[in-house]
Amino acid sequence: MKKLLIFTGMALATYSTRYAMIAALGREMPPLLRQWLRYVPVAVLAALIAPAALAPQGDLEFGLHAWAVLAGAAVAWCTRNVLLTILSGMTAFWLLRAIGM
Amino acid sequence: MRDFRRGLLATLPLAPGVVAFGLLYGVMARQVGFSPWQAWAMSLIVHAGSAQFTALGMWEATGAIPIILTTLVINLRHLLMGASVAPHLRGLHPLWKALLALWMSDESYALAIAEYERGRGSHRYFLGANVGIYLAWPTSGLLGALVGTAIPDPGRYGLDLVFPLAFLGLLTAFLKDRISLAVALGAGGLALLGADLLPGKWYVVVAGLLGSGLGLLLEKVKEA
Image 1: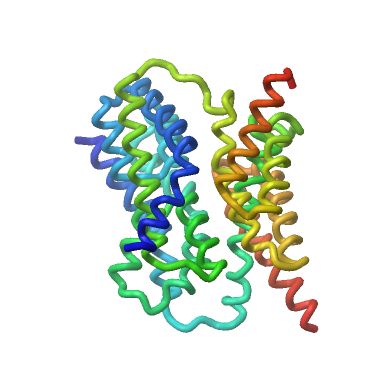
Image 2: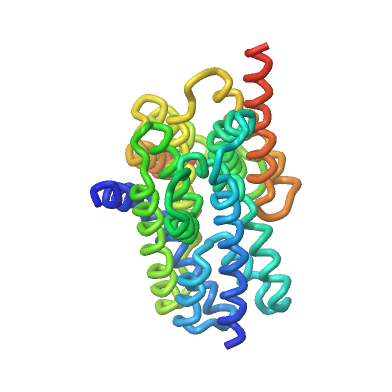
């Protein structure tokens, strides 16, 4: 029962962060805000990618993950396709691991 | 309905990543004393992977309030995601907005916002992506909890690459000029620095804010 209460609290905390801005920015917004918001997705996505590629264990390293993401980046740039990007990055990871990198 | 299905299907390439971390979550939940059903319930109710992993790590050492507050802090990045998707949801019924916020994950947000950027986005596609991730996360968590034995670290098989690779594929939708490229590189660099210096997921918040601020600044400089 106590666990269920904590889960509910966690869910409310999570939901508040997900809903707050969607609810608050419903109506007309100033052009400057609009202009700024256009750059948020690219910044957030890059922020999610960089540490996963270059610091997968927490410390900065140019290892398997970085090479795999680099291969994925080349394919992403050419194809703009999510499935192909994942497949090529994973393939690069497995190949490089197989040859003992 | 077609858009909903497109969104749902778009999550399929990400499924190996969701399942790998879902299984790991289930195993870890058992290790801190959850029953499989409790592990399942947490995923069904909370549906926030990073926050759930962190909560498990704190479970035996702290009480309810620190766990809930930490969850709030870890999910602050969703404020940024919600803000950037909000312009696309204008005019939508409040109930739709409330529903879309419910299962918005990093992954479904990324799928939806890229689709909006390409001019093919819709709230039904967004919902489909949300539901796709939501179907896989609790199910794989339950599975991991039922199996219960140690499973290998997803990183060993490169399965921790599925999400960043997917984000990379979606990022290309936004790289339209030199400013957006500069934003991507700047935010990536800041995130590396932030991941090293800041706790939890603060690096996404800081790099997201400063990186997009850089974009606005460069655009103003170009206009001037």
